[in-house]
Image (cartoon, rainbow, N blue to C red; front, side, top):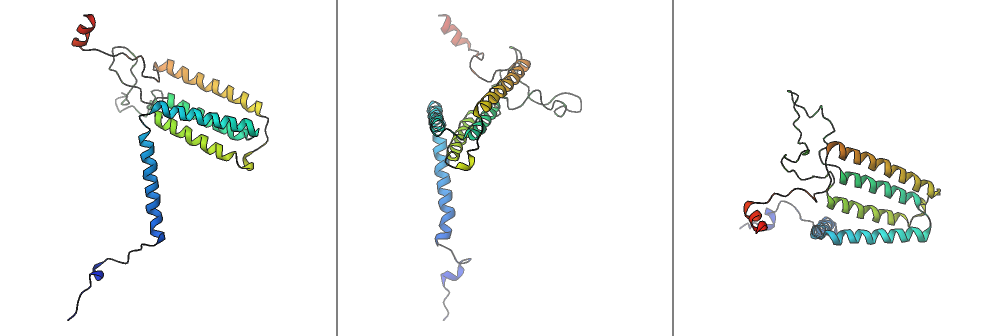
Amino acid sequence: MNTISLDDDREGPQDTGPSSLVPSRITSLYRRYQHTLDSTVPHRLLRWCSLIVITTIYALRILYIQGWHIVSYALAIYLLNLFILFLSPKIDPGMDEWDLEDEWGESEAPQLPITSNQEFRPFIRRLPEFKFWLSSIKAFLIAFICTFFSIFNIPVFWPILVIYFIILFALTMKRQIRHMIRYRYLPFTHGKAVYKGKEEKRAATN
């Protein structure tokens, strides 16, 4: 009498060797990394304090080794770009005005409120605060690692880089401030009008 083995019903051989454990280890590490990031979201003050600590360590590292000025300059340009994105609205009211108009010539893009009697719309950043912090942390870590490789230590007269960055920062911020004044918005939610109910008004008057 023939017997049917349960092993014959399997679709194919299952590899339980070291090669199959590598993807699962990577997935597990990524889940732990993502879980750690998610747990830091509500702790805004601690996150930015950690960025200040990392910035101080990097500055002391540069002062000690007296080099790698190109790396620091590239880091400063990248941080400036992140800062501009952090101050910019997600939907620029002055960009692609013709493309956002419908066939009747009316704009379908959501606009920022410019008068006090318009509906309150919170400021939505192009680069959220958490991503701004995370990108800054990664940039400092990469720049810190680069200081251990002499290939990135390109000789340069660093005062020229400092002066050029100050000029670039001033021109960029001037353009950003003009954009804020032109479209009448602030990249912060502090100071927005908050409307109280009737019961809250009565309690305040009493």
